[in-house]
Length: 102
Image 1: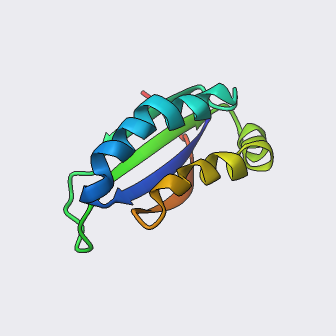
Image 2: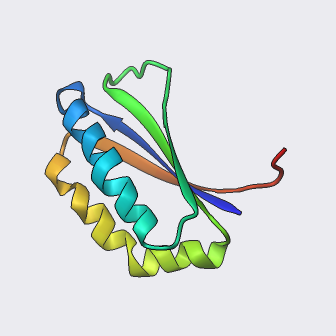
């Protein structure tokens, strides 16, 4: 199993609109690609020096091949969908390999 983790810091002024968009539009669109088994959205409970509110969204996928297919087939369009929040957030992405689950 792999986790595609997206950590996002969003400005407080855009937070409520962004959070609604994430929960009602973006995450369902990510899952609709068929590349991800589930999504977990968490709020980071550490205050950032830069301000804003930080979240981590973890999309679980079965293997690296499926994640690569997401990058090739879906990532560009789904990332472009966030343009309505241009200059209102910063994001970074990491890939995680599940080593053990208990």
